[in-house]
Image (tube, rainbow, N blue to C red; front, side, top):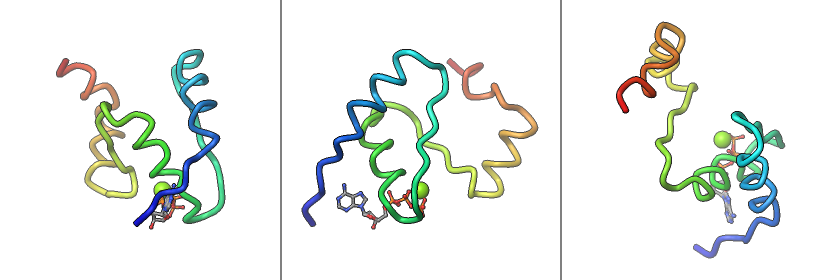
Length: 68
Ligand SMILES: Nc1ncnc2c1ncn2[C@@H]1O[C@H](COP(=O)(O)OP(=O)(O)OP(=O)(O)O)[C@@H](O)[C@H]1O
Ligand SMILES: [Mg+2]
């Protein structure tokens, strides 16, 4: 499958250098997750749509940082 190149990738990367949190908003199924995972391919990925992941994040939001 061929992937469309996203012009927004450069803006997301630039914003991530300036802010601790960047939010990408857009229509359903428009490629938000794919763009962010590709732009930050070296970072771990957690989906808060998974109830177990969400529950762990709510109980202990800094757990992942503490492991490092
Ligand atoms: N750059 C791209 N080129 C081609 N297809 C893409 C691209 N980005 C995403 N897709 C395809 O579009 C679909 C939706 O992508 P994705 O899950 O990233 O969207 P989303 O905006 O995060 O969706 P949701 O709103 O459900 O969270 C997937 O099938 C994905 O493979
Ligand atoms: Mg998504």
